[in-house]
Length: 466
Image 1 (cartoon, rainbow, N blue to C red):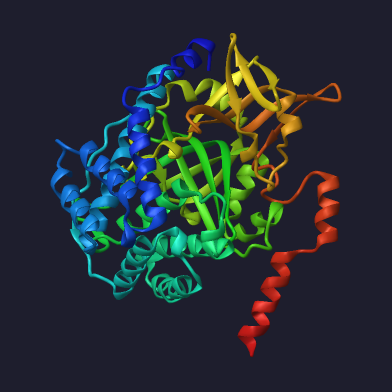
Image 2 (spheres, one colour):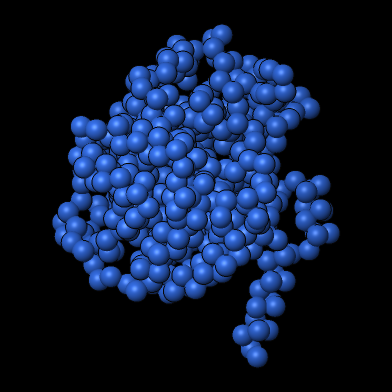
């Protein structure tokens, strides 16, 4: 990535600020609750209807706004509002991603809508939909332990249905977060945007019934998978590692920019490097990350840019330096279009390589300077499960990371750095500790703290034996 490319990211896409203002107004109304909509909330909802005028959603959204304002809220009204909010953020996502692709010269395939037929409705789906409805009526400030206790049964029922586990994990995580904040009414500042994002996503996931493809299975791909870096997402109730990589298809086709992910349930006491032990069912992936090796994959399902992970269809390959992969293959790799439901400005995460740049400290905020142009570094996103630290990033001469858009600006989230430490050039990657901590000091601390995963598994085994 060069300075001229960074400069192109400075311009704000037309209409972006207005769209985000409309969303912010909606989020404030949701915070207060649709069951007691006031003048400010009614004006915000009217603004949402105006923003969707002239689109296919105009009729349903106008009807939903009229119903909420009149105090009569049906499930279809909330679905229309959630869809309208997601459509605005999707448009913002597309504008920003188009700007980024133009700046980087990155090619991206067009989205193809899959042909589906409705599946059989699961009873748990109705329960999840009812819970999202109750939350919207009460608003975040009205959430109490009674509302949250109702979520437990919905989560349990949804986890029993494989097609609904995505809904279950989302609902479980949000309920845990809300539970830690009760009483929400006394909070000085409610994370309205984040919670509204989760509400809209959860509600839209419950619309209709689980669908099945009628145009065949997802495309199956084989070839050589070269990891670029890993983004660790850790929550109190779940952990996911998302690997960004370049796939060289076995049929000789153009290189593809893909990502694959594995996840596991967890409790809030499992933090830091211990989260890797929860993913021990995927030893080949962990080994590839820890040893920086490529993988040979055979017939893995590919949907858009998301590569499904199947352990018995993967083999370890030769060592592959992620920096070399990024330098040689990343510029020409083709990216995939984003699923409409996943289109959100904060969901943008595009791998880039920055070399020969200086790291500057701007009033406590680290930024990488490329040909006089600066991009702030999102060091607050560095996971405790890896060796990357703010000090190591500050000493970097090269950074492999994800370009993200957050807080009205572009940020670079480091996934790996090359830095000079004690007159030696070293590399540090988020996935270096996937098979165990390699830093002696951190390993000692881990040993003193004990193996929380082993303890919890042993206790769970005792309970199951009783």
